[in-house]
Structure formats: C-alpha cells, structure tokens
Amino acid sequence: MSFQPYSHEYFMKEALKEAQKALEKDEVPVGAVIVCDNRIIARSHNLTETLNDPTAHAEMQAITSATGNLGGKYLNQCSLYVTLEPCVMCAGAIFWAQVKQVIYGASDPKRGFSLLDSAVLHPKTEVIKGVLANETGLIVSNFFKQRRKLK
Image (cartoon, rainbow, N blue to C red; front, side, top):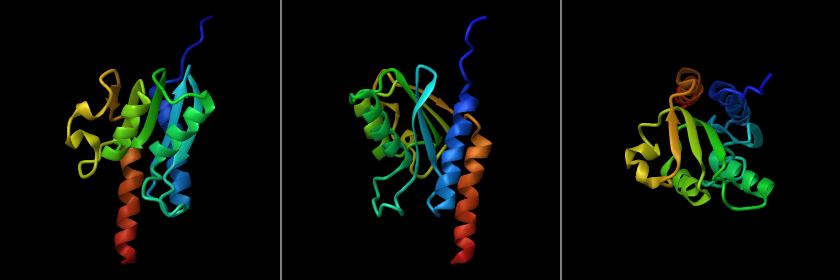
C-alpha cells in the first residue's frame, strides 16, 4: 500500500485553523501553513495588531518560521497554503524565498498580488487559487462586517 499525500483541502483547513486563531485575537483572520514533503513545517496567522507591526502578515510569519526550521532561506521544495490571496508585500517575500507553490483560498480583489501580474512571484512558483474559497472568504468577510457594525 503506497502512502497517499494529504490534499490541498486538508492543508487549507489547517490554514483555516490558523485564521481562527487570528480571529480570536481580533486580528484580520488570515492563516498560513508551509508544507514540505507532505508535512507542515510552519504555521502562522496574522499578528499585525498583536506585534504592532504592519509586516506581521500570516505569510511573512510562516516564511520566517519555515526558513528557520529548514536552516536556509529558500523554500523551493515547499508549498505555502494561505487562506487569502497574498498581498504584494507578501508576494515579494514569496519571490525571495523561491516558494515552489502558493495555494490560496479567497481572492483579494483590493490588495492581492494578482492585481499586478504573476511576474511578482518567482518564475518557477506555481499558483493554485480558490481552494476552499467559500470558507476562507467567509471568515474574512464576516470579520469586516462585524467591524463595520461596531463603528
């Protein structure tokens, strides 16, 4: 019997667990996991409010954790699963880390990197979009709906 790898949906659900952690901290609920050899080597969520740092996006935190875990700056054998399409800042970090795959859930029509074009990512990076898009989009849209009600 051969080993069956986990699915994109499985890892996106793990990223959603991270987004839930962000929500519990009143952060924008975005979560990320980095997978290498079918194993999660890093997980994170937005920490911009907690750390008072506008660069503390889930992807940035996960990249830092993964490179530390692997002992090198390149993630060219790794896949990044993130619940929301990465912004241009995160796309730059993804480029420099040479992430093999970016798999995201919900698109971000206001801030997502695809507003530019895929040239913002490393030429070898594969992009898969829309994995569990409904679930990943709902957590973010509900967060902002709730925020608007409080204002």
